[in-house]
Length: 83
Image 1 (cartoon, rainbow, N blue to C red):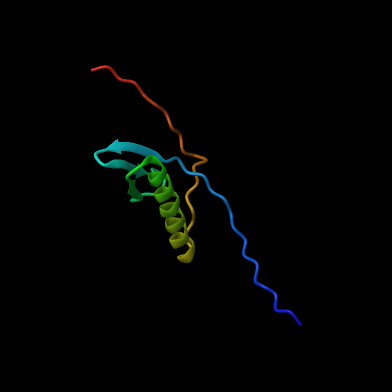
Image 2: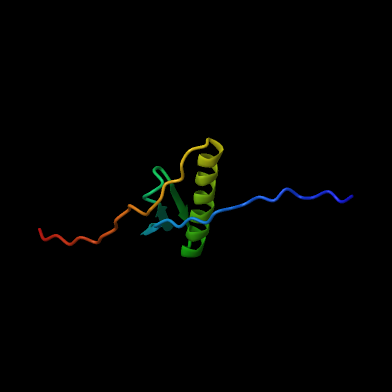
């Protein structure tokens, strides 16, 4: 009798990611995930670092049985002001 592998299910999430060009590369912020900041020397590296950081952050939330934040109620706007 063959041993069956335990199937795992996964969900897909999407988050707003902000890349800021800084000296030496790109700093990455994920506003909906407090404290998540990472860095990459190139834009592609910054994107990959962001993906890995988000996966780790969500994994930590799930391991503690905490809710994963949603961006459904998140409103993003670019607001211009004159000074």
